[in-house]
Image 1: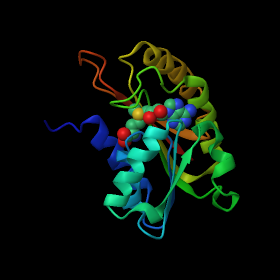
Image 2 (image 1 turned 60 degrees about the horizontal axis):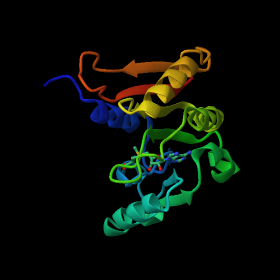
Image 3 (image 1 turned 180 degrees about the horizontal axis):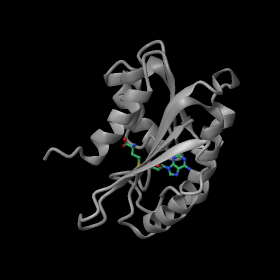
Image 4 (image 1 turned 90 degrees about the vertical axis):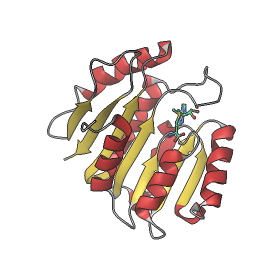
Amino acid sequence: MKLERVIPFAHQLLEKAVTKGDIVIDATMGNGHDTVFLADLVGEEGKVYSFDIQKDALEATTEKLTSKELQEAVSLHLCGHEHLKEIVPSMYHGKVTGAIFNLGYLPGGDKSIVTMAETTIAAIEQLLQILSKEGMIILVIYHGHPEGAIERDKLIAYVENINQQEAHVLRYQFINGINNPPFIIAIEKR
Ligand code: SAM
């Protein structure tokens, strides 16, 4: 297949926006795959701020980072992403170049603990305040579970109304897939 799949496409966008030494955010750390990806991107000089509300996620991510000797570049928070602006030091406000949300539930974990549109939107609003110019927010939207479909609809309604002077908003989606495959919203601050 020549068309880029959803997750590699999301990573490509982040690779364009983020360079070594940058400050970035993994808003939904889960099992740590995106945190590791971001830590590799920013290198030892940069910093990844990662958030999750589940202890299991922190433990899985700590283990992954330690085994790859990447823990120095990462700051893990057992805390909802809706508090990210309080946690990212103010000296970095205006300097955050990338953020990713992998929405839904923790793979292999409790499927009743899911991301919710209200807190996701609160976090996006804070990010839009602290991103750098051309900073990028990626939302990977999983809408195959009931809460996911509700979150999708609220998020689409929200992002469609972001002022075009403030940000470019892109949707990347395979539209004939069965079982509601995930899709991406990318928001680039202007
Ligand atoms: N990116 C992760 C990975 O690489 O494994 C997968 C993330 S998983 C699909 C979604 C995660 O979001 C879950 O671990 C869940 O606990 C977390 N979550 C739910 N609500 C949250 C919130 N308000 N703030 C931060 N994380 C949240």
